[in-house]
Image (cartoon, rainbow, N blue to C red; front, side, top):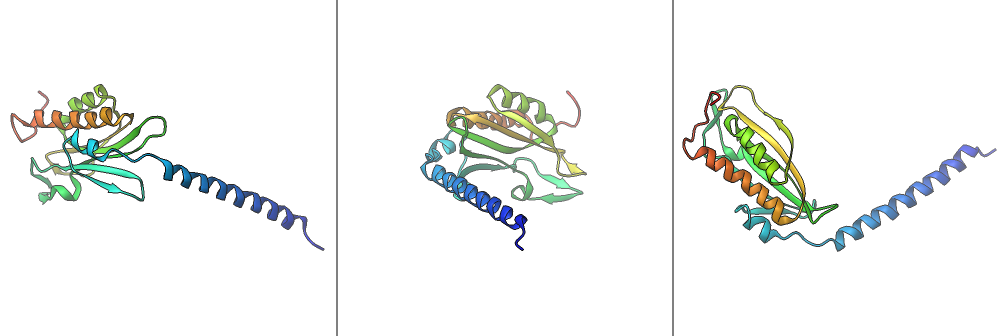
Amino acid sequence: MKSPFFSLLYVFGTIAACTFFLWYGGAIAALETEPGLDRAKIESIPGLKGVPNEKENTYTVSKPRSDVPITVERARFAPIMTFTSWAAFAPGIKDEVMVMGDIVLFEDEVNPVMSVAADNGLQVTALHNHFFFDDPKVYFIHIGGEGSVDKLAQGVRAILEKVKEIRAPTAQPTKTYP
């Protein structure tokens, strides 16, 4: 005697497989027809070189934090290892592009940079640290947004300019509240 459970399993399995292949095929077709990112504009507005990731359909610009020496438990770290700000641009869902990034900041830069990000249409989705006993204290903010390439790249540029403005008078971050 044949179990009805196996017939039912066969029917649901066939439906699931067909649904998956129909969706997956549609997703591939959508990616193939998606317009490319304006890499030249993404690089020129913030003034940073970028690197494409064809697999993820992103274009990432980055800037190592090499203006101030950073130590963790008295060991100096190279900026490229863990102290690099980056912003990855990808085709948007509701708008032209979206951006996500991680910005490396010192304690006296956090509030001013978060304000600049908000003023330029970027969301700050996280503020955290990676280390204990780091000197100076290093924080990371996650940024995100969706809009035009011009608007989002300008937001990234505004963040980097604010950091530069704060560091101009003295390279070393302040250790007390002004």
